Amino acid sequence: MAQDTTTQTVSIVSVSGCAAVVSTTSVCTTCATPDCTLSATITAGCGSCPTTAPTVYSMFPCSQGCASIGCQTSYKVLTASDGDCMLPPHVFLPQD
Image 1 (spheres, rainbow, N blue to C red):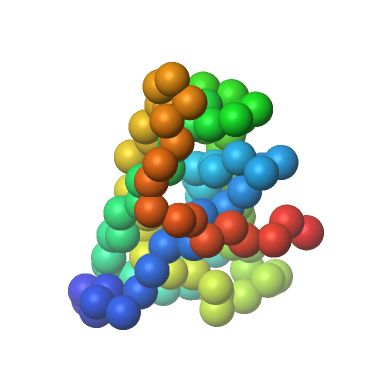
Image 2 (image 1 turned 90 degrees about the vertical axis):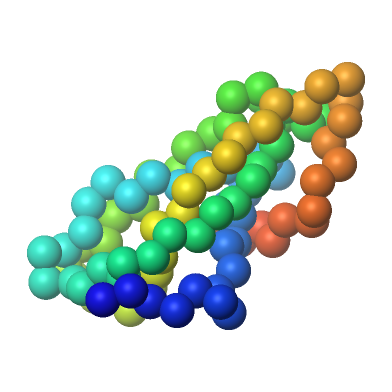
């Protein structure tokens, strides 16, 4: 079943202040996963950030429940050129 994505936004994860891509490695087989995709654009190479965006791996094991599973995110990663890092502001999630 498709999920309404009109009010959903993507939160960009930060690693040492640099925007990162999130990759889900596993999802508990009893969790329902929404049939939706959101898009996000991040810029790699800004300031002291590497030109390759870091990747944060996440898992949804059965022991942690299914409440935080949302739409899949499709990332477009741009590389900063000549220090040009002007993109819409990102929302960074705090790191545990």
